[in-house]
Image: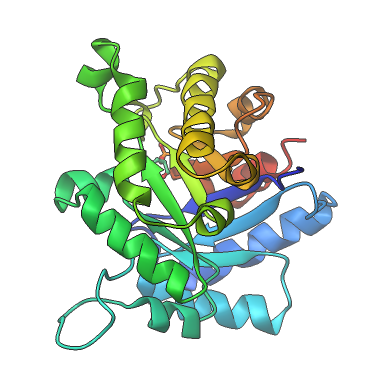
Length: 257
Ligand code: G2H
């Protein structure tokens, strides 16, 4: 089954709404100028909550070939949860995707696999595709336990989801030691874990789900290294942080083909 590559730009806590509008406009112009073929890679921007409305207005108003999403979602359905943004709110803003369980959320906000699982479940119920992040830290990698560790996170994060739900979501493998550090996992490192994730999904869900699920690599992805990463058979795209804040760089990543 052909999986459309996905390039998702996670802006993290950067940019205000004016800068967001400029970036999306520049990105759209650059993609158009370079004759980007959306069938060959899907382009997604993931701004902070406060920029989503501006991005929505621009994307809808100008019918830009860009999708957008959010960086997090509440594990609750709504009600008295001060500061939380629910999946229904994101759906109303036209979000197609939401990142759940990014390592920065796991590390700085104590998100467990159970919380990530609850968030993914909420997103799916609102027809938003979760991008479920997993990946090991440096000590785990050095001990050689990275595959087992990452698959444990995967099992916990996807617990209770149906094979059909898993088929439609996105998993992002992000080795924590390669995030924002300039250290990139080699294409072989990325392939090793992405292949293990696909095999685990074949075992725990179904071979159909394993063939359909899109698995991204994330961690210091740039225009200069994306082609080699995308040459690996189990890597279906990238979750891009720093490099997604520059329109030309991100457009070049999207045009890896
Ligand atoms: C990993 C990645 C995007 P960066 O967090 O999620 O960030 O590309 O800056 O390493």
